[in-house]
Every structure is written in C-alpha cells, then in structure tokens.
Amino acid sequence: MTKLPIFWGTPMHLNTTTIGQAPRRVKAAFMWPFAMVLAAILLAFAIAAYLLEGRVRDQALAERVVAVRTLLTQKIAKDADLMQATLHALMANRSVQAALIRQDRDALLREVSPLFATLRDQHRMTHLYFNNPALVNVARLHSPANFGDVITRLSATRARETGQAVHGLELGPLGTLTLRLVLPWQVDGRVIGYLEMGEEIGYAVDELHDSLAVDAFVLVDKKFILHRQWQYGLALFKRAGQWEQFDNRVLVAQTAPHMPLEITAEVLERLRGGASEVIISRGKALHLAMLPLLDVGAQRIGDLVVMRDIDALQQAFLRSMLSVIGLSLAAGLGVLALFYVALGRVDRDYQRQHDLEHQLLRLGNEHQRIVQLEKMSALGTLVGEIAHQLNNPLVGVVNLAQLAQREADDPARVRALLAEIRRAGSDCHALITSMLRFAKVSGFESHPVAMAQVIDETVLLYRQTEKHQSPVNVRLPESPVVLTVDPILIRHALFNLLMNAAQASTNDTAITVTFCAGAHQQTGAPGWLLVVTDQGRGMAADVLAKIFTPFFTTRKDGTGLGLPVVQHVALLHGGYVTVTSESGRGTEFAIWLPDTAQTPTMPSISLPVSPSEHAA
Image (cartoon, rainbow, N blue to C red):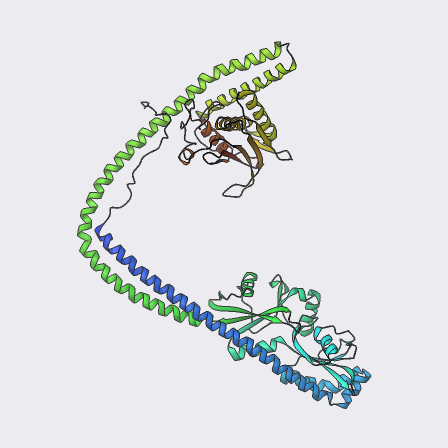
C-alpha cells in the first residue's frame, strides 16, 4: 500500500457528508406541517381537557374533605353532648353515687353494667370509667379486670384542674384513638370522683363513609404508642393490625376492608404536605387527601386519609376523550389522503434525483475514508521510526551514568545527581520500549505504587531539568495513597504538565501540584485527582478546543504530542483528563485515576513524546 503524506500540525478527520437522509419532498412539505398542526390542536385539546378534569376532580375531593371535616366536627360535638347527658342521668342514681363514694367496685359493676351494655349496643359507646378524686381508676365497665391505675391523660387532668367537663380525641394506653368526655362528679360542692365515657374513632369514620360515600383510614404516629401495649390492645379488643406496615405510623381504624398497598410512606408524606394523590389499586383509580387529627391539647397525633373511588369518572372521561379524538383524526386523515394522492407524482421525480446524489456522495466518502486510512498507517510508521532512533542514544546515557557512578570519586552530591540521571534515563528507556510495543499493541505494566513518591521524584526531576523554573508547591494527602498504575507513564504525564505550566508561566509565579480524592464526573465512582495549576497566560477558547489533537501546537519548537500523550496515559489507566483555562488567568489540568487495584486496559494509538514536549 502506498504511503500518502501526512500534514503535521493539523487535526486529521473525515469531512463526510450525510447520505442517509431522504430528499425534501413536496408532499411532505405540505402534508407534515398540516398533520403537525392537526396533532398540535388535538394535543392541546387533550391537555386542556385533562387539566380541566384534574381541576374538577381535585375541587370535588376538596369539597368532600371539607364536608368530612365538618361532619367529623359535628359528630364529635353531638356524641360529646350525648355522653354528657348520659353521665348526668347516671349521676342521678343514688346507688351509683354511694358505690363511688365507697369506691365499691363490685357495686359499680353490678349497678352500671346493664346500662353500659345498652350504650354499647345502641349508641356505640366503647369506654366507661369510674375514677376517684385522685384519678385512680375504680372500675372500667369495658374492661372489668383492669383497675387501680392512675389516669394521667390530658382530658382527665384538665377536668380536675378546671372542674368542668372536657372532651376531645385522645389516645389510650392500648393504642385506641377515642373520643372521650371526662365529667367531674360533685356532691354538696365536693368532688367524689370523675366519670369518663368514650367512643372509638372507628365508629365515627363509619358514619363518614355512610354519609359521604368516601372511605377513611385513621393513622396514628407511632411515637405516641408503645408497641407492647398496642399488641396487648389488639388481643384484648380482638382487633387486627400490622405494626410494620409503615415506619412511623400505625393504622388504628378504617372503613374499607383493606388499605391499598399503593398507599406507601412516600404517598403519605406528600398527602401530609397538603397535596392530593391519584393511585391505581386493583385496576381502580382512587383519589386521596389527608386531614390532621388533633387531640384535646391541639397536638397532631395522627392523620385521617380520605379516599374516593373515581374510577367510574375516569372511565367516562376517557371514553369521551377517545370519541372526540377519533372523530377529529378521521376528518384529518381524509384531508391528508387528498394531499397524498395529488403530490405523489411530484415526489417520485424528486426521489429519482435523490438516488443519483446518494450514489455520488457514497463514492466521495469512500474515497475520503481510504485516504484517512493511509494517513493513519503513515503515522504508525513514523512513530515506530522515532522510537527506534531515540532508543539507541538513551541506552548510551544509561551506560555512561552507570560508569560515572562506579568510578566517580567526587562528593556524595555528584553521586546523588548521577543516580537521578540514571533513574531518568532508565525511565526514558522504559518509555521508549513501551512505545515500541505500542506500535503493535497498546499496553502497559502496572503495579501498586506509592503516589507520593512518584510525585516527589517527578517534581525533583523537573527542578533539576528546567533552567528557568517556577517554584512548585506540592499538596499531598496526610495518609499514604497506593494505586495500581504504571509509575513511568504517570511520571511522564506529570512531567509534561509541569513543563507546560513552566513555559506558560511568567514572573516566576508558583506552580501547584495537588493530589486529592475526587469522584468520577459522570458515574460518581471513587478515585483520585492529580492536578497541576499555574498562574500563567492561559489559553483562548479556540486553542483550548484543540489541545488534545495530535500535532497541534502554538509553539515554534513544539511537536504537539505532549498533551495527547498525557490524555493517552490517563485513558490507559481507565481515567480521563480535564482542563480549565482562561486567557490571562492561568490553567489547571487534572488527571483522574480510579481507586482500584485492577488496572483497566483500553486499546488506543500510542503517541511517543519526550518529557519536554507540550502542546501549548
């Protein structure tokens, strides 16, 4: 194959022309705009109808929520009045009064049990307490086996403090949310005890369901309930419940047989924030909202989730929308068919012209591809020859450095310098050997390396090599960092960046080398950043866009291979290079390396370059 000349200093790329696009058709010029306008009108109509339906739906649910709040308030007030009237009637019973004064529990149970059974069966009253003046429970009609404990609920203590009847929602020790009324019993100006009557919240929400055709779920914050006592209450009152269903709430009452699994903790948080939600459960659309539940002390102890079945409304809306859209599409398609028939003949002429252009462009692009392959082949040949020519002198440098180190009888400083020369020569020799391998297969040799040592050695080599050097500040992490890398390639890349920074800096401004932890820009994978920052003249935007292009340079004595090699070294290690620069304000290069013991390999073209070569 004949080698074609390569124009060094200019980026190589294929100036291809797209040949896969269809020609501009007269039929499309008329039909598609019309179709798009029709589609836009239909889409706007559908969106407007959907938004309107959503607004009407939300408004209807908001009205239901207001009705639920009003009905629940009225229910609480009505039942509290009923409880107070019942307790006043009970206080007229002299036998009950005498039994309470004597704190005769058996007499209280005997006298009041028939009345409580009637209240429970006909008026859904679930709790009835007799407490002495110290709020010690004398008798529980709903749980006769439990007595003798001190009642410390806010409703009871408030009734004792005010001497008045106190009512409101309140949590019991067994996790029951109950509407309670506490009434002081006074005889001749002296309090002989306290009567307390309660109705569990479940009966109240059942009335909401019957009156407003909505389902309700009562949730209580777990911080107000002890798990052990809640479980005891389930067993005592023969209720079912799941403590683990939510992290911070527990379901204590409901009107539906089951709470939909789609009502998750995230949905509840959004509802608590004031939003409404539409969920699909078992094929039905359900609309949700939430009301706060406040206890006697105006403390929010839980929430009332209101659920409305809107599946029938959704289905009716969907059928109406599909009918209107179907009729509109039928009319539009009829008009489009007329345009299609009229303009088809003209389109066929344009298609024949496009086929001819397509063949010509394909031939042109194939020719450009062959020329580019020739250029890349010539580039590989040139890289191999440069590496071969540089390898022999470098072998001589290493041999001479070894001879000088063995025979020199000068002070230790000379030996130290010769050792550095030997190390630098060995690195260059190894790098050139690697580049000779790159001409066949791109690869490298990596092993665990202390990064602080690699950086310090490279900075020392730079300080001994560069005549007009700028001061270098090195910032390393406190703890040693060991990465699996090729130390020769890393030193080579860092040396190139230091030389670039020195040549771009003026007035002996400092260069900063920083090695720190940093995540991958896109994946967030852990890694490390090797950053070189200068305060030099910076780069313009048009130059910045080309700095990694092989053979692009802004210097007369440059080859344009330094920065491409830096990028290649980063890619071989599974990393990347970023650059930030502004004309007149300095430049920052950052090499990101993965934090892993497995060194990835990536096929790419090797670009050999000496440490002093750079792009800008």
